[in-house]
Image (tube, rainbow, N blue to C red; front, side):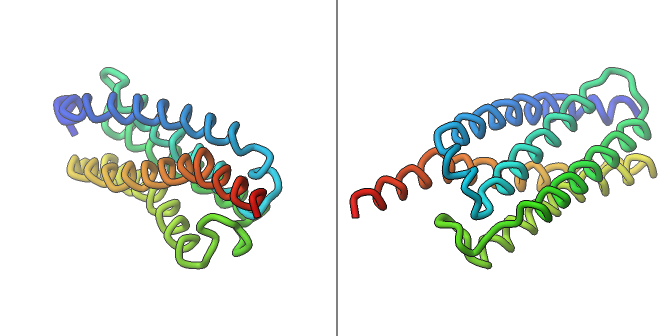
Length: 176
């Protein structure tokens, strides 16, 4: 893989790094607003951790992608280690702090399954992209796009839940 191939993706990497850092900040604001509810359990803690670490993953991928002059195989190795590490981390966290059907916001099986698929896809696709880069296949970089979409979906959705839905439902419960 040539440097020009990686350079062609420079703007994409800069963009995902900037967007990921911004969304991580938004998630922290949402978590701060709903911290007491998140800490009560019902799977919100796991959702917060996964959304934050998916943005951390995207931030790392963006930073690695803009490192000047590194060979494609090094970038591939960085993608593999990053995706695998985040997957392991969120899997361990989810095991110890599982989501619950008792969650007041999107706690049913369907939304939990969607979030799990997005979490696995969002972490495994960069691993596959990294393998492709090591094999010299530049088109494998396109696997980062659905990975970023998965991370965005999880982060924006959970930011909404933490900043709007949990406080709204708590207020409704008080009024009853």
